[in-house]
Image 1 (cartoon, rainbow, N blue to C red):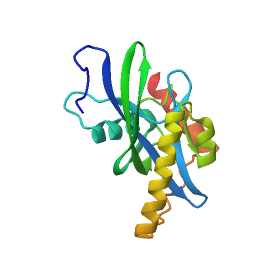
Image 2 (cartoon, helix red, strand yellow):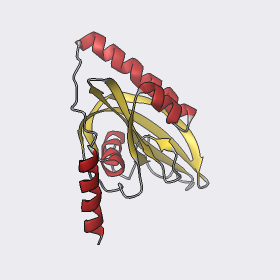
Image 3 (cartoon, rainbow, N blue to C red):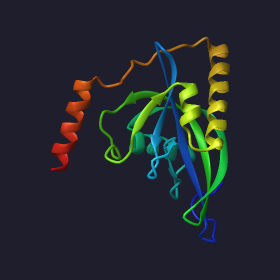
Image 4 (cartoon, one colour):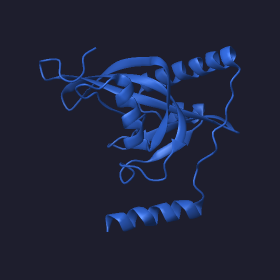
Length: 174
């Protein structure tokens, strides 16, 4: 698929990451808030010359402060209309390897790690829940094939670390 405008100025491709990690408590998925405050996965417009994988990786870092490795091909795609333009969103599964305390859009986006049940409840679109189900199926299949179960250190900040990170961001903006 080509990225950007379809020629009529009304169609754009977007790519996003569906980030996950394994902890001692099990698999968790990372959700962020949209600009309207709804829970979604990191995503953005595929710029000219970028691949879906490059865009998904870039958006995960910018919007959620996540670094990781993409696992397999697209989980699914769907169309949505926003601001009078049609977007086709392609989601890719990302195994998170690092979670930054501060990131580019942390001043207006919330980031939340959620269990499967919590993520299904929080996600704002049924299409996102469908992609989440595809991610779970892929992870189960991958575990069967590889026997792999790797825990990522739980990176939730303590209250003290959260206060320090917030103070640091405030100092940078001042």
